[in-house]
Length: 627
Image 1: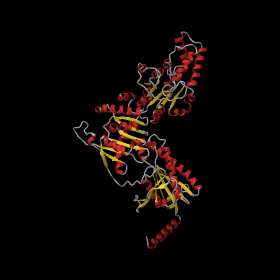
Image 2: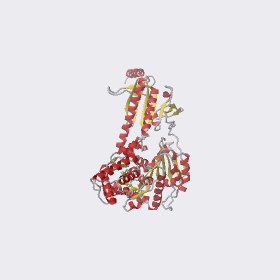
Image 3: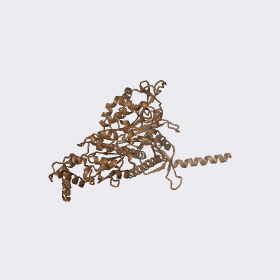
Image 4: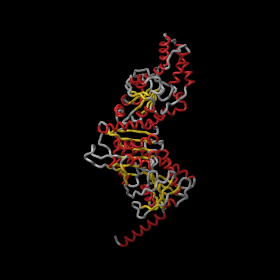
């Protein structure tokens, strides 16, 4: 190239530069990134991960568009658009009178919407948390073809992207130009200015955190590396939990069996008194695979049952694994925390010890509180085995519940109504207990057989009709929907665990049965009504109908009953049955003679078994371990 050609090229570039400078426009650029989407794909699968990304991007776009339209009507902005989607990330811009204020307002709306949705999730991994970065400055809008949105280019865009990478889940980070762009008011305030070196950007950048109503999380530097340890003994673990107040914060605690043993050794009383919703997930070495620990496993399962019976605020789920013992790890996932906390075990090897490792008193636990990359990675290493075992070994389960006399305390009213019906025809010698024996039977059958037994002849059709009418009249006067203690909590907890639930009831007027509590039925996947439990044939047997609705084999299900006829019908359908014998004159031996799996005195006792049935061990094996 000649010197003249080179000078001509330089002049052309200068002209292009001057033209571009005249096209620069001030805009606020925002990125919203779905946190931990890669981890979600690893744990729940690629397809579910893609679906979650799509749901997140759709929610962000709809929220952004709706709020930006309102801000445009208020005159804060002239234009806005979602520029592009990058997997689990959304990029948008705002221009006009107050683009910085508009961008922060939209970011707050997105975070608030996500918080509302997350509060409805029972599984913390299904929650969606946004990392948002915003920066304002002069950008060049490029358009690549007529149908494409304008794409902002320039250093402010790069800074916004880096701020998003730096942010913690649930955090909004902004450049100083955003903070200078308007006056903050209401529930929006700013944290202190800090200076950070951002990847790929030469000069340090001043940035701030926005408190949008969720408190300041502090700006994540991920620069300092720190490690601290505590002794692995129960006392030291108890001190750590109490110092961090971890039993009074909603969330999930993941433990291996041995860490639960440590926890229960000193904190059983605190666990039985804890008044915050806590979910414990415990991985247990199959006692058949580790006979040395079999007694420990059974002792711990009994402890879990004891805690469940005393504290309805707590939830426990258990999985059994056959492989080598896990690393000793406590992982705490408070609902409101951006990062989990953890205690990771360090084992001292000793070939003379039974398991080649010495006891907890000579071991240490690394404290991981998410303040550095090292801690996050170490905790992830320890919990990855937990996540694998937990997700690989889960199985479907179904529980089929009777209603009257089990969940709703109806039998005293039915007893009095039946006795009144028979007394009007002079039968004062009929014992009330007989109606507990015949609960679930067709009403005409009950009248005919009881009348014949205590009067000595068959009743006429008029007498049968009159008795049933009288029973219904008295029942209408006496009956008030009254749940047994713990009934609503039990069904809600089982539904939260994604257990398949079915309700079998002889009632057809469920609205009359439940009154204002009809929402209770929403927890059940299926409901069989008008069920005559004296019917054993598969076509009429209500429990066979329940199996068809659940599309499950009998061995996958368990029936929970309170009446002999219900037990007979369930067993005729091939389904193993447990009995809750609350507020009934029938003795426990009446059901034990029917070869039921268990007879519980009340629902609270039953819950200590039923709440553990969302496991990978067969129900029969679980009962063996619990025993």
